Image (cartoon, rainbow, N blue to C red; front, side, top):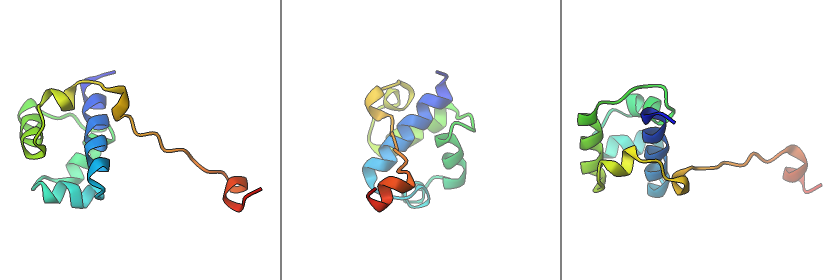
Length: 87
């Protein structure tokens, strides 16, 4: 797993913990939500300075964003049509 995947997983985890949408979460932190949404999806690289800035604004260590932690992986289970209608 590369660094941008680790950062993306951790950003998503901290955002889910906040209960906010991507736009609201990153805007509240005063950060570019469009760019960070792409980072969260693992589509964009991120500099160490930006990682440090995000960590500071979240009140965490930079290592908390760059280290893989299995418990930070958000698993969304898809519900198929049968489960939705109770069959």
